[in-house]
Length: 290
Image (cartoon, rainbow, N blue to C red; front, side, top):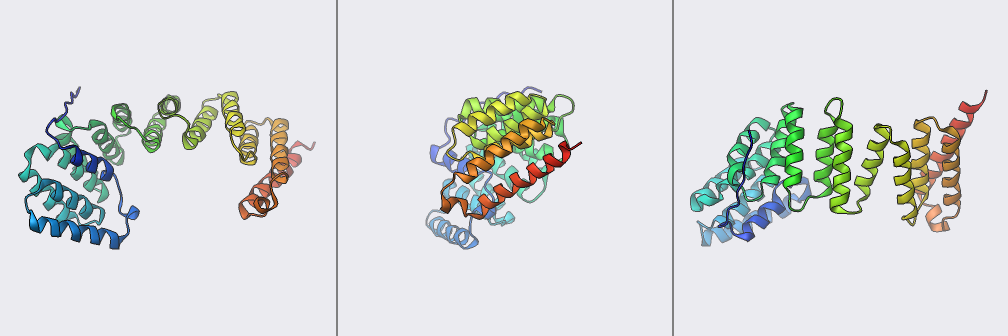
């Protein structure tokens, strides 16, 4: 089935901004006391203006973040009665709530109601994809993730990662599709270390080892700290049994570590990197012995 989306011109921008900011947020990102204070503040404002849909929606989202499911649903319902045009947005909020409380089927049903008229369908498609994924419908989830990602006006790296992860689980061509997704993300978003690292992993997985090495070298040369990239290079070369080149990379990492200022070299993380190099060189030395 092909879905056609249309914008809701009457949706106040402040409400759309609020929902896009809160939708998908999780309780750990907020301190419990902070949530309680915000809920109390909105409750006081609602005592002055009980039918304000903006306030009801805001408090409903805060209740969701606090896992107050019934209170959140009650606020969504009241906001919908106060402003019926908000209902697609409210259904998207309900979909996120159902995901939060581990009911993917209910979340999927909520996205059915949200999608046709939602002002930001890409966000709803990502919610729908998550619900499908939790229901074990991986092929549909991957297609939905991709459609959602391409529909976003302002995609974030985590959106690209989730889509690539879903695509990668598809049989046969999944890894290549995931790589294409990450490459699209890098082209769209620009430099992003986490996407670059995932691209390295995916290039290696599809046999494009030299491309992965070139990417590592480019990232290494652009970085003020090169030892970590030398180690990653060595690890990749070791995986594909290019032992001599792996040894060279680990030794280059050791040289980079020894050139660090004393206050950096003394850090535990630097010590861990040095130990990684030493262990790798010992391992490869033993493997290369006749």
